Structures are given as C-alpha cells and as structure tokens.
Amino acid sequence: MRTKTRTTRAASLLLATTGLLGLTGVTAAHAAVPGGGVQPAQRGYNFALCSNGTYASEAQFTKRGNFTTFVVMPGSCTYLSLNGISSDQVVLYGFRPDGSKFKIATDTFDDADGERIRTLGTPDNNDWTTF
Image 1: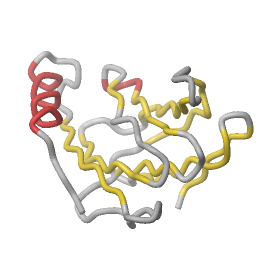
Image 2: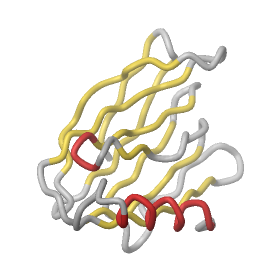
Image 3: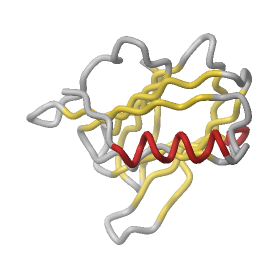
Image 4: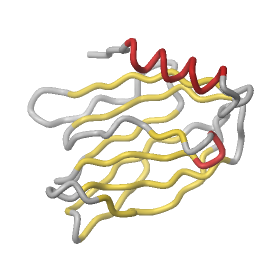
C-alpha cells in the first residue's frame, strides 16, 4: 500500500520553491503492512526508513534544510525519492512513549547510492541497521 498526500506534495513544493532544497527534489510515500511487518523498498525511491523497534522514528537530512521524514510508527516504513545532493548527513531520531525525542545515530546518505535504514530495539536500548 503506497500513498502520497497533498501535504507531502505541498511541503516538497514549498521547500523547493523557497530554496531550502535548492535543486533537490523530494517525493514521499508511507507504507505499513498489516500485522506490524514492513514492505521491501518501493520501486523508484532511494531512501527508506522502517521502524522495527517499539518506538516511532524519523530521519533528518542536514544538507536539505533539515528536511525531516514523516514520523514512522513501529511496524511502518516511509520511502523517499531524493536527488540533487550527494554525501548528505542523516540524523536518526526516536520518540519515547511520552513524546520526548532522542537521537539514535548519524549516518551518511548519497542519493545516487540510496539507503534503507531500519530502527530497532527500545527507547532505552535502541539501535539501527541497513537492509
């Protein structure tokens, strides 16, 4: 199941037209599989963030005006199509049940190579991996 919202398209357009992303583009989709599983990466998207832990997570791209993904709930994924910037920095965050945000890790992202990230564990024992 793949969906795009007007909000996602409007936010991408707004970021692109205000110069925060410069010559970059962003397209997003959000997917979940019943029963808490995650779908494999969707065709046409070069970044995936899947929350496989007990907490929600998000990714922030520092060279793209701190563009941040949707908050991805446990058992769900979000997929992005990013272009125009190579060697970006991605900061992964998680959210505790009380809503407080914590940093999981920092990774690099090259839009030509793509990246699929999976967050794991619990807020107090968090981890991540690529897949």
